[in-house]
Image (cartoon, rainbow, N blue to C red):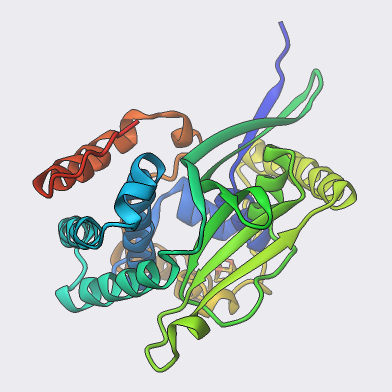
Length: 312
Ligand code: SF4
């Protein structure tokens, strides 16, 4: 029998470890979330789920829906109803939900005739990057949609909401891992900007990103290195602070805790400024049941409009 340590990464955990081990510990081991929520995470999640609904329908009935104005309008209405339902589950304000639904409709109308065929939706993967007697390194992820996109052909596409205009950064764990897993050199990132002052063609951008064999191999080597470090963190239960990570992404949620003057104050802040949220589960991509309730709701609402939505 081997006592191999298995490390399972997804892009959230790998990013988090690379940013700051203590941040990963507080966010993903202790599952702490700030009491004062930052709604852009929930808004992004809502938009993402509405796209899932849209793409499931397009996957099965693309031509029928896209070329029939009445059916297409019904589809958007069904997705808006679902968006309202989902926003209540996520405790978003009605104004926040309305903003996301507005942007979703604008994006759908803008890309309606883009010629993209959706082949698979929320495509999960698990890959083995390394294995010896001491260490196994696995990587999981879920690709928003796998498509046939003219003129590129078969390509994975990923939605990114909010953020700055312009090309996303190439040195991305997520996008490199998708290309590695799909044995592809290309991914397209679909940016959905929320800037109302810009025209749709300015805030909805599509960026092809390329990863050749050299880049993917470098990413794999780096990831295995980080897996060894992560295994060490877990084994020793040590989570060092990276003080260069505190200002990133609009400021780390845990600055008050890390900046506390003594342990008593730190414990007090941990109890008063944070609540325990859902646990981030890297193997959740393999558990189909987790999505079932959500997809059943999509199917139920689609049915209200006479739209057949296959939930698998
Ligand atoms: S405040 Fe800085 S040191 Fe503390 S968890 Fe966040 S990034 Fe790490």
